[in-house]
Amino acid sequence: MRPFIVLCASLLFLPSAPGFSQELLALDTAINRALAHNRSLARAAIDLDTTALAVEDSRSSFATHVTPGASAGFSSGQDDWEYGLSLEKKLSPGTELEVGGTMTRSEGDDGTATERASAKIELRQPLLRNFGSLIHDEPVRDAESRLGRAQRTFEQQKDDLIINLVRTYETIIRLEKQIESDEAFFDRMHKLYRLTKAREQQGHTTRVDTLRVELQQGQAEARLQNTRQSLATSRRELAELLGEDVNTTFALEPPPILDFDIPELVSAVNIAFENRLDYAQALHDYRERIRDVRIAKRELYPDISLVSHYEQYGEGDADSKATSLDEEEWFIGLTASTDFNPVSAKIRIKSAQNTSASAWETIQITELSIARDVHQRLSAHLRARTDLEIARRNQELAANRAKLARRLFEIGRGDNFSATDAEQAYIQAEIQLLSAKAEASISAYSLLRALGTLVEHPDDLKPPAQEAQL
Image 1 (cartoon, rainbow, N blue to C red):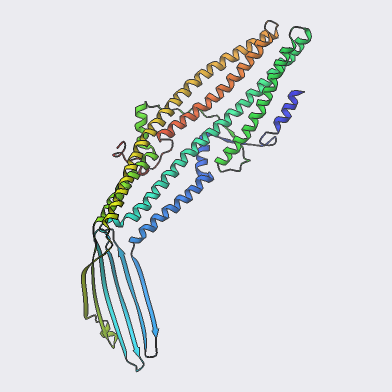
Image 2: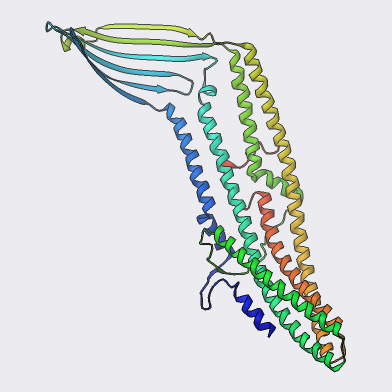
């Protein structure tokens, strides 16, 4: 009666009704689907696109701006009209160039009219403190820096997603296999319970032996139900990672252990320095802080600008006189700002230098962290592969022992304790083997993650070859 009750209870945790067809899903297909449809990753992609727009916005300051203009004014003694067009362009050295033309017309109450046409060009060039691309490209560089950081974060989210997916996928495979093992174990224990009960009635075993088998049977039942609940939770997590409805379930193909050439420790660390995006970001941050120091030192220079203006114009009571542009004006000079505080400038320089030194220490910390992470992941994977082989041998030995102990007990040549102990060791060995298989697979992907080669990232986001291991 008990197996029927267990079966009925187990149905409560089944993912769907009988006859439901599940999609067959392989691990590589699941990874590609997650990268394409995971909702958190999709949201991150939108945020990344927004950050990219900020770069385009910062570059727009160097675009040519065309500004049309027109005005009209009326008073008791005179009516005025003006229209024109100007083009403005800023260059990387800080040069500001404006070219434009205007046409004005004034009419008095007495019917007289005056027209004036002009064409002008103005140039402003910062010198010393604000000269050059170091200063004027800074908004673009800052936006590009934020974009680079966002891109690296996005790529690292891909890595994290794959690791979470592999862990969940392997967990589901393990739990499904464990349920099969638990069900088989429960059936064997139930048969052993009936045999022990019969032997007890015959006087060949004691009540203690029967209670021991019944206890193990109850423990198997509880473990089976807990495993089914864990399986249901993991299936929901997998569906969420894939961007599917949480009630969607899949039939998963057991994946082979990821096979690749495992490098030696020194080579593995060097591979990580060539590919890890967190290391690339640390190097980039240090370069930016060095740039900040250079900018801060410019505060010690005077703020002087070269200003020039040239205009041709014509004026008269007819269009022909106004558009002749037979008059000219020009100006060239220097302007200077009085905003100069050397004490404050030196403080800003020292602050920038401290930030730069901190960024350098971050590189050293990151290098140590990466080396430690690679060592740990490499050791964990090698240990997992060894543990898997040991678990396979132990499972085979435990299966043979349980089979022999069961047969001896059935023919009356073995005791109940030996049979139950062997069965308990067998189920534990099976569970250990399933865990070892999952860990061997997960540790392989985790090692690739530590090496920075789990996903092929864009080269411009990786550490520059000439700067790796500064």
